[in-house]
Image (tube, rainbow, N blue to C red; front, side, top):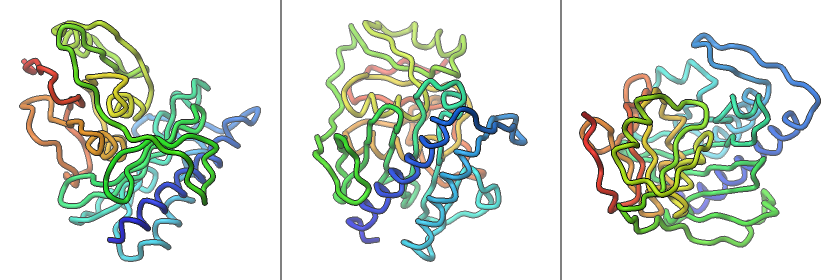
Length: 266
């Protein structure tokens, strides 16, 4: 894989998809339907998906592209693949809360080694560069001309005063009970894959997720987290978190900065 071309292509497609999403988001009204699993889908999800899928197929012919919105791809598997969530945080989008993201990742050998996360309504763009280092790019986010970047590094956590982030739309009692085992100084709620990026940028130390997610929900932001020195672990045994699993379904997980003294699952 040509990682220079990969980084530029993922960045460009995420920005183009974000522009398409914002056109629909800023309209007076848009269509919302329920998928087979009862989760919402909008015309923005589908338009962004079509744009990204076509762009990846053209740029990387022969590489498997798995996307949330194309169910037929969920039965395909390969050691190397691209995985897409064209609009993570559809509930945030529908409620016009802004915490939604475009996510594209490249996976090799079970590890997401490159990724881009773009939050168009928040004006935040996170990605791994050609060398796998994570950065945040300042605006104006021209698809063809990268702007000023700053490297991302996870913070050194203070276990007596941790900063925790959790889901805005998917909080439950089990998550709250687990977080209560830590000494928490700051707590924030955020939507979509932005939670990973807050850990990657040093704005939070710990993000536990005790709920159902799919690989397209996490892969891109996981790549950004890892590229910033962070950790993505299974919740049950704190073992390695891998990709390319049957059905692309994730176990519960913990995303954190190294140095967080993790509490056991039980």
